[in-house]
Image (tube, rainbow, N blue to C red; front, side, top):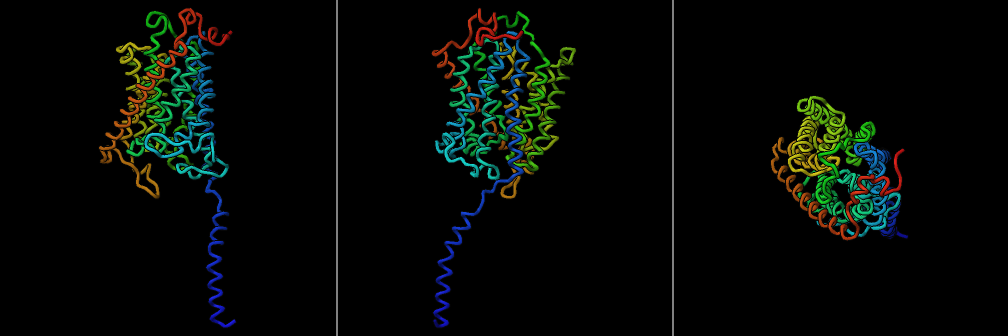
Length: 440
């Protein structure tokens, strides 16, 4: 073969090999799963699940009367069971399976297409199965939190119906709107770990449910003192530690933003507890243990939407505001309006979530959320007053949707089963009348 012919043949051969080499390279490229990120989110997932069982179960059980302790814990337990299964079947897909403005798709229904190596665009360094499970724990605790507003009087069968319907028609849409590519997230609403999706959402639902069920028998005239505050303190400790996974894990990686979120979370909890303690000391003469743990939870809930956007000193300020505002909501506002939110779900979580979401628009620091690919987001104090208006938009949408749909769903459930136990059953206690069991 002549030299020119050899050159032509070599060129043709090299061109023919290019597609093959590219194909082989693509086929052999492993998923970009980071072991450190994966280990951290696995830990965070366990921490957030612990917040519901046993954390929330103990926290709520310690604050009801002895005859309703098991029934209260059963509501947290059944929320875990129902929401977990529904999330795997359809919830995850509708929240994170597409980026439509109103709702996701069924592309991930029954966890279709989720293998050991697949990742999600929102969490590119961890397995999608882990991302799915982590987000499941948020859905679980949101539904379980509502039970505190109706403690001592809601029929168990009605609560089971509530778990199913409220999860599908309230939690799923709002989670998609904020986190799954929906219209609130696209509009620029900031909610790092659930100020809207979790806390304001469950708080509004709890208020609506409490108003529809009416006050507990003896409310305002009988002693409805907590059964065992020691249990509530233990539950608070578990919630507090679990919140490190709740807020720190929402960075979806093991890095500086996750660490900062944990720092501001702890400081806000301490500041909230101190603010509540001193206000109660000043107004009532003594600082109660119930007040201190309530202030800590208020600080934790209020910092949640801001945890990935603010620095430690802003976290302390947000915590102090949280303790003061939630103390006012659980005392003056509750007394003024006359509603019986048994365990102050609205006063702590609803008001705290609203306050924290609004303050995120005030205190957001661009340096905390900045990445190599995008600049961070600033709040009012860094010269971006429009972020406050955007946050108000998210608050208004969540309030309206959750309030209206919760009311409609409870009306529908009331046609299927009575929402409330009978007066005699309430006197006997829900442990015996709903579950056939009692504490000895």
